[in-house]
Image (cartoon, rainbow, N blue to C red; front, side, top):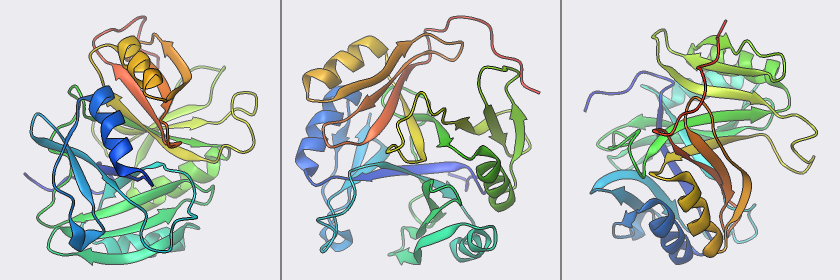
Length: 266
């Protein structure tokens, strides 16, 4: 598999206090199976759909028992994680974990943009990232949710060289980022104060494909999850936002069930 262009979403994982509970939840909701945990790398455990790697779960590292609630982290591809870390710092971001090699799998770092959006950087080695995308049970899209869109826009375009287009809709502040092609790689939504309580931090929301949005939400709720938004129809698919039993937020979308015309982008 060829290396993805710099700035392309390439992987996602989440830390769970109850890893077995997370396996049960996501196994039912998204149809994931799980490989053997890697004790050498903190019991990092990959998730698979149709025998293809789609994500990973991991328990807290020693000393992190009091860490914040679980959250999905999106990683962006980089040919040089150390160089990207320097760009993050020089553009007002914060490097939370300095670049480190993960065996021969690749190198990573964790960072935040100036508005507090946490994300990762992945320099591929033998682990190239997603083996399945845009199909049932796999990653398809992500959006930066921020209260300070101008700061996030400047940061992400400066670090990853994105082009931007804005949705021609006066009711919301929404942009998409691309890498010079016709296909966008990331969305950005302004968090309206009436929709997001102050305690909800800026974040990146991950979207996973499902065959039926309503059924996926029902399964999540039966397993202790909560419906946070939707299900809602859109030109991109029927989607909903879910809070899993351990507090991690993610979205599910049925990309085959579309309603309405695609929005104009300017």
